[in-house]
Length: 323
Image 1 (tube, helix red, strand yellow):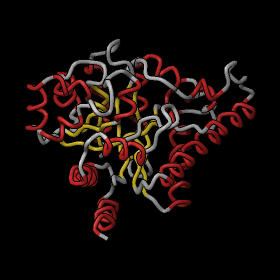
Image 2 (tube, one colour; image 1 turned 120 degrees about the horizontal axis):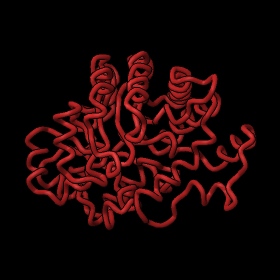
Image 3 (cartoon, helix red, strand yellow; image 1 turned 90 degrees about the vertical axis):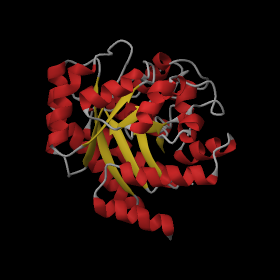
């Protein structure tokens, strides 16, 4: 059983009852079809529709209380799925409001994660995302705000968003340099909708070794061999990839090929409320699709080594895996 979740988004962790309560508090009118249909994707489609479901939560997350609550509940829900360590990522610029700036937004999420950790006893950290469609100066501001919280809740830095509309990773070099200088771990959403070659671009341009999704790598033998040779690690969110159309089914997901050729793989549940999953469900589905106990154990060991956590947390994770 994998107990380390290295890819989950706060915006896709809003419980339905929480959405209704936050909407009432903020004076946000509920969707005509209700929060269930607005937030939850019931059948596979494409990345555009998937992101629309995630974005339905954005109007609810414009306050300290809302972000702190959702972050805390995300950690509580992760713990309920037998998760021992969770990296919760989000795009803070989306939630900035007048009087509620980047530092306050990131601080609210860090507070919620800390409260969740205290409540459950698991470990967790925050990964801050810049978004591809935002201006470079805005993303630089996000990087500086993340750097100010390095070692104080924030553990990593990511780029997410529409890979096809905004393919040029050169626009994010300065933000990633800022994050790296602060000691943050680096990852990037690539090769989910775009070509597998974007993985090499992310490695050479941004300095990342962890890749969010990377699903398209399964169809490119040359890039897969390169990724193995360079020690790249894929954050696989299998159910999400089916819902976005990146994989036809979990049985046909390229994770099987990744592991067969020796590529580093870790797991995440991506947007668990959006696609009605958890880390535990991901593991059970992958096991049913043919992953062996040894392969799942290897995934767990890899996750311990590549997690953006302090050495003391890594040691705790290792100890727990042998007890």
